[in-house]
Length: 605
Image (tube, rainbow, N blue to C red; front, side, top):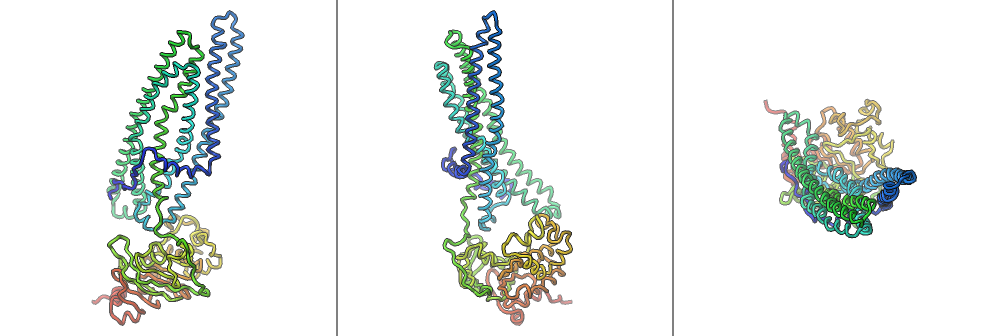
């Protein structure tokens, strides 16, 4: 897929108002209903203050202002007017405090909901199977956890609560308008559909436009993440211009999507203003007629005019509120896509337990296992072998033979399409995932170190890791010298992805991390393939002590590391072609012997 193209799953098409989607969002509101009630109470106080303000204006104009117009002595009226002014200033102070509370309480409410939702999405992401992440760019998932959820914050602060309150506000204000002058209120009511029509007409393209913007942003973030992760390759192969061109291409698509949204607003706001002017003009004309005919006082008309603005404002902002809701719904659809994804690998509903082995490591078996990442492209074909209790089985073969897939199935990163993998005759699919994976010490070819301290990376907040087990792991992995040379030792800082360490040093720390919990099963997935010879020798010296007494599956690239394995499996094209000890396989003069010759024999002169 081109970087400028959008994943169809990003463009979710749904109804303009999705009641079921809104109900799902309400699930995250309920725990914070007190905050929402507080927000509603603040808005009610603001509304009451606004209504009281219109009464002050009417009282001041129809009272001291009108009285002073024809009076010889105006001092009593001035004194009364000052009373009204003082009352209005007190109201202004009250409204200022309420405006502060409106911002703080509404924002806090939105952030509380967003906090829970973001935590829920992140927790769910961690439990999804690797296949889910294989199919989606990392940047797109980052967008869903950050930008998409942030859009919901605006919905909860200036969308849902304010929208419902505006509906109440319009109803109350309309009732007061009819109580002041029914004829004038009726004229206003008859012109209001023009404003509503413009607001509702705007919604047609708003949601689609917001979906497009979110999808383009996700694609842009995905490409940016990919480039930053591979920046060394970009620089080495001098691909800066090409990469910049592709980024700009994606950026242009994102810009165009935003431009379409801006175009909608550019049409919407002038149309809304025109509708408001028509309503105000009709009210002004009818009001002047009523005042001329002495059917309406000046003060009543001023109050009516102020209330009319209070009526028009929420209707005029209906489009903006709707825009917030549409943006939020577009983001919510994408968020719930993640939350609705059921992991294909999950703990059994009725999990089993491993039989008591008396403290001994388990026996591992692969029984007629078949697996494919993509339908129709088998990776493993009828794989059967056993790792006896406390023994080491190594797997070798060319790249793409399916070696690492064995590790993925053993740790249940994926499940096989046929056959089964067992520990002590218990299918790994019947074991709780946490229980299963806690039994393993895993070291990958390119292991991951997190930003933080060395100690944090080695302990990983595991309950079974003690200072004694950590010291034992440092000694067994030959990493004690490395840690002692660091400024700060175990408390030394680790840069993101372990960038401050060499490849070999990262592997030594990864091996230490795997051993720190004293696992009874060790899995090494080409753990020495990317290390230098000196580091490899250090790891080899520790291998015997490392694997002693444990069931071990070793995926090997360098044959020198697995000569002492109890059994060696030779894989080719997803099948086990040979099996035996190092000496047996050399004597057979088959695939293993050829691999050995390629690595160790000197070429003919």
